[in-house]
Amino acid sequence: MIGRLDILSYLCVFLIFFGIFFVIIKAFKDYIHEGRGIYMQDIIREEHSYDPIFPLVWIYRMKGDPAHKVNFYHFHAWYEIVFVHEGNGTFFIDKEWYSMKKGDVYTIAGDVIHKPLPSEPDPYDCSVIIFHPSLIHSHSLGEVFTLLQPFERKSDTTGYRHTLSINELNRCEVLLAEINKELLSGQSGGRHAAMILLHQILLEVNRRQNRKDTSPDMDKLTKSEIWLKEILVYIDDNFLNITLNLNILASQALVSPEHFSRVFKQVTGFSLPAYLGAKRIFKAKELLIQTAHTVSYIADICGYNSVSYFHQTFKKQVGCTPESFRHKYGVEF
Image (cartoon, rainbow, N blue to C red; front, side, top):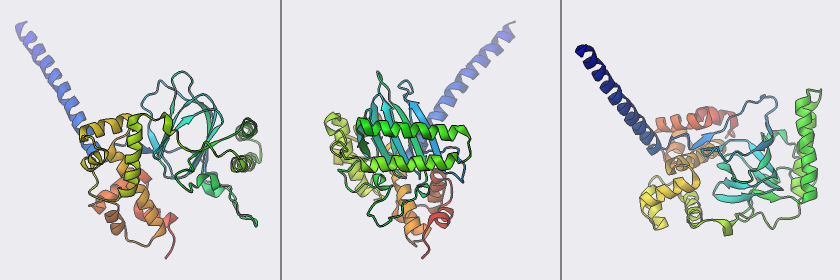
């Protein structure tokens, strides 16, 4: 009997130590990943199921869930338009914070980090259209006009938000309901009808007259959000500098590295290495498409000491190798 009790005691002690060891190893792995800028729970490349012949993702009347605290920041190569039907929330886009409200329309081009946050008492109700810009016929027809104009930011004062009047919102909601009906009906010509309606929606947004409230809500930002906005602008100007790190940015913000790291994560929701990594990958994509620079040169100027690590990171975030991406989207020189 004593022998059996001894065996059980040893077994319990072993299980306790094994559990502690497992927790320590997991925490260490998370720390290492975050330090290398690949903690992918922070910023992820959003993926949806779609028909390659019809590159459009349709989400109708989505209700925000305030209880889901760990929402992810995401980006994608397509264009996105978000209509707010009801409710409230906060929308972080690139380096700006917007107060979401009824009648707001957000137009987001590719490779822009963004994340909506629903309010606790009255979460937003919105419709989302994510599409490849090739779906939109935008010939000039003798006019200086393009349906994709709302996705082009001409200056820092022209934000991602467009506020519709009640009449404009009502017209767009009718069009959105018709798109949903066409896509669910399965009738012949449903996709063509949806595209015609999407063109009409973009025309409505383009013709919107009120442009006074497109700027971010600076008066509603906390002190932490205000100095972080300045830091995000500084990062935009310097993120290709390989020496840019936590200590330099903390010094720029006149706070300690510990305080900077804590507030950056608390306010934005993602780590500094993940944010810098995403910005550098976006720049690498741009250079791969628009220049004839070698992959190794692009990796170097985008802040990657190792070409192999650049390949690994690029494939993880974009879904293909730099060479494949250039072959598919790049301009021939």
